Length: 364
Length: 256
Image (cartoon, rainbow over all chains, first blue to last red):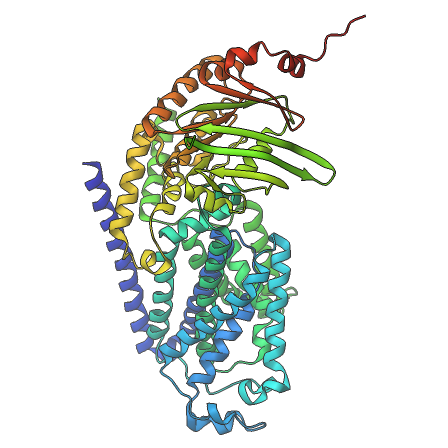
């Protein structure tokens, strides 16, 4: 009896999630149809979606496996450059590589966008496999420093003159085909997010969590912790690479400066703010941070109240407000907005029920 | 003579200048309950850590079912059939009771990231969950299945840790101070519980314990260690009357 109940409840949840996806898609179609009016909103939504993918991929390794890795920007750069190099139209290439020319082998190497994105992920994953061997033996802070260093090395190599004919060195790449519509961006991000959720909730994901909780206990139940860490690192890097590719498509032109450490911090901010170890937290956090930075923009414009210009409202003030908001969140929601929990229909129901119980208890 | 499940010969381990265990010899036969006792810091837990591969002995040998396991990693040792619990409970604290046990059955199923992520293993996953459900029911833990492990009362956490060890389907179970922090009545219950699981799961049990009531009641043979050295072994009544053991526990009588 209970089992059947449980199953039907799962199905209802699934239906609600599907409904949310469909409604979002419909809204996006509407926005796409009125592109000129909503151009700004569309770009915020696209950026949020891309960041959601990268934040969730970082959460796999940081939140679910307990490995504090700061290599995000490096893996994104690998994915972004791979995608860009493989998708810039052949006709546009002489124009992009006008300074140094292009490697003859790459002149006509154009593949369909989905394949380019996957290859971007594969390249990032391959690097994760290689650097993971020495780096994953390190613990906490040391791992963070090592991955941060790796990320900077990748950036330096991409910008170096040696790579001119492949990455166009410090000139960066442009004419990257963008999303045809925001729906395309939504579809790519959705596929990535669903795959990651499936992994997190699978037996592999449970092994990740076991390693996070207690390494010695994990070994005592037969989990090979090094292999598990490596797998988590590779999976995370794969999706970070794909996310980097999506970012390249969103920005349409990239250079090595795009992938500075600040990019990693932006992603880390989303993960921490949303809740370390919370899937929905990362997604909500991505929208919260990306949209928040934009919505607060009116603080940058001069404000005149009753003929008096308020002095604080100057360019840059929004970042002050944003930082204050962040501090408030960190102080009052120490574990992030969702604190390791998930936003779900059931959770909301339980929450409201608990409140009822409390109030009933109070009356009795 | 091949009924040995576990055999330690001349096993020593040295940390820097400290010889934590000095040529320890120990045998556990199939179906036995054997206890290791000794004062604090005698090297009992270190011996457990050597057997389970967390430490690698400096010299000597450890044989499990006639095969040396001295070079194996902890996860391999668990897979070969040795499960353990820890002195200061090591659960997956933020996971539910069900997940704690579910993770321990993974080792007996063949999964990889593709089959598990794409749910190609759903039949296997169902088997795993069914198995966990049965185990939890038999250990009277099913009602706690959705509780977060760290939120459970101490005694239940101990039992969950044993259940998790059982989920790996061990032949040999190592219990490190299972009665630590328990009152006499709980200790009594634990005594019969350990006997029960031995019979139910056909286990061989090696345990470390300070509660002498439990040790004397439950074990067929006892090894006494002091300062890393074996000072006595035998059945409970022999141990109780052994002068060396009394000396280790109570000190030497000073004669004027």
